[in-house]
Length: 222
Image (cartoon, rainbow, N blue to C red; front, top):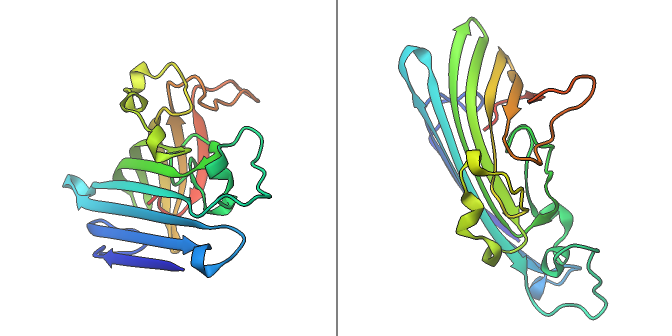
């Protein structure tokens, strides 16, 4: 059973320039409803768009979620090797992940963490500027992570980007960069160049060893 509440005050659903969008989601699986897995999930997201001078726009997003299994662990339950038992009790497609062209850019799609988590935090800040006609550029800062459990989150996980040299699994991932876009009838076609100082940032090595990651996408990042 899933309940979703939305509040949409954007001036445009595809290319918003002003307004806000909020979403709250609550989901219950299994338990009294039966089924192969039992868990509860809550997710909230808020997005703000504000016009700046000369046609520039500021877009920000903050999302947070928490979930967990409910009921007793089945007697036949066998967790995946190296995965938190509570995470393993939730179907992979329902767990939290971050990373990708519409999340923390530079990392692969849903790459953080590889097995998913039960608590998630995601933040994005983006400045969008038109150039001429349908062409524009953007500068962005992304941050986020998904933890095995909410109680594993520590203040030390939020250390500043320029101090992020430990590459611990619990650390917030940061990436920043620039991008170009072409506005088409169905939405923008984007190419983003993302950097990060973290040692585990997936920098390409072939055919050239580049200090940044480039990614293509269709549609706005958020």
